[in-house]
Length: 140
Image (tube, rainbow, N blue to C red; front, side, top):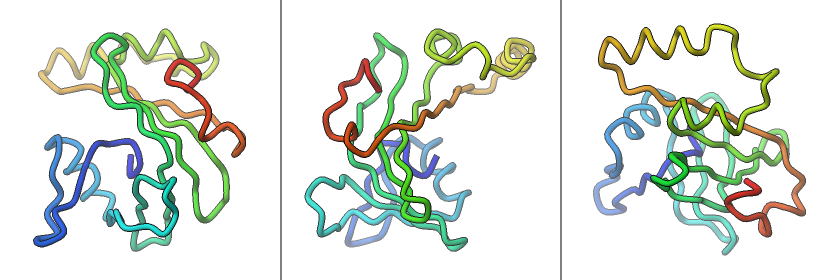
């Protein structure tokens, strides 16, 4: 969740600006946003006090037609590249591998939604570094 968001940081104040839920998730994980990077292909970097860090190379903003957003990122510690997606639980079901969906997915969704929580589903998939800059939203 440190990578899959649309947050920006106001340089003068250090304030994170964006969806309030995304801000809270980012802060809860004790991450720091790094918007200045020597690599022009990097949209932003992130790091935590626990040594986790990475870089986002592509961002497919939230699209109401597909009810999700996704990013293409690389972990600094493992060197692995991934697509990270989040979106409506119903729409995410259509793109996730059936064997990766928890058995109680629908029950948990119904429980949280019925109590008024905002529910998002998240998914990831590994990709090769060579595909990072060329894949489109549908491939991601």
